[in-house]
Length: 97
Image (cartoon, rainbow, N blue to C red; front, top):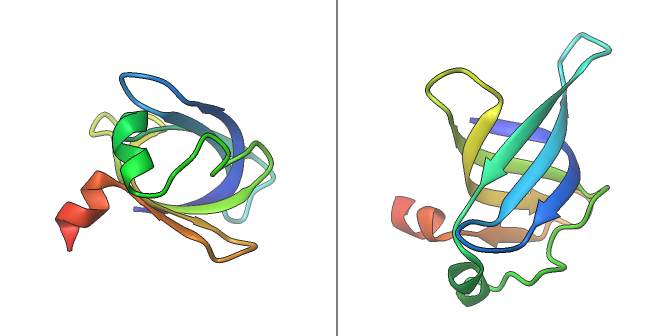
């Protein structure tokens, strides 16, 4: 699944780095608040991430696996900063190739 929205917060810590983002619902004035998790900081650092890779307010596009229960949560695979085009990979994205 691909989501496009605005990063709201980033929690850099173990066991997983978490990102919350606001996703505008197409054709509506409402937004959904999504909670994304990814690998731990050590693994992300090996893929070039830092604590400042994503900041609140960044316009982002993410490829993710949504939760099976239909709630607004997902496992992050790849993140792209829309304004710069910078792509951040995860352990999962390397495994998908």
